[in-house]
Image 1 (cartoon, one colour):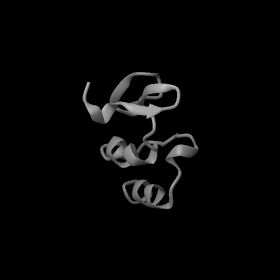
Image 2 (cartoon, helix red, strand yellow; image 1 turned 90 degrees about the vertical axis):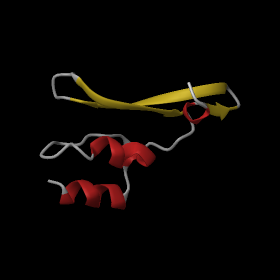
Image 3 (cartoon, rainbow, N blue to C red; image 1 turned 180 degrees about the vertical axis):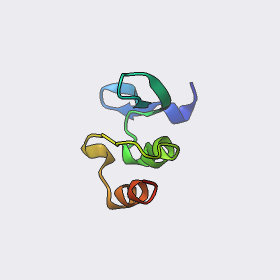
Image 4 (cartoon, rainbow, N blue to C red; image 1 turned 30 degrees about the vertical axis):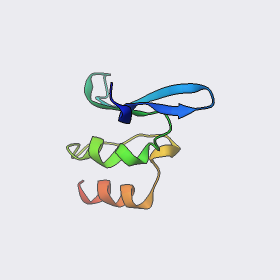
Length: 74
């Protein structure tokens, strides 16, 4: 794994897996980032092909710019 996918913290090296799944749990797409990466930094890339879908994410995906982008693509 490359340097980009490793996050450093006091606890050590960490990673996050960001995923797009269907309503029945089928994996569609995913990205691996360093553990310190903010969730919204990959939100647009993960959702760009998701047209006509509902988007569910925790507070890490909350930004005005991201919400405007997914609203326009509806």
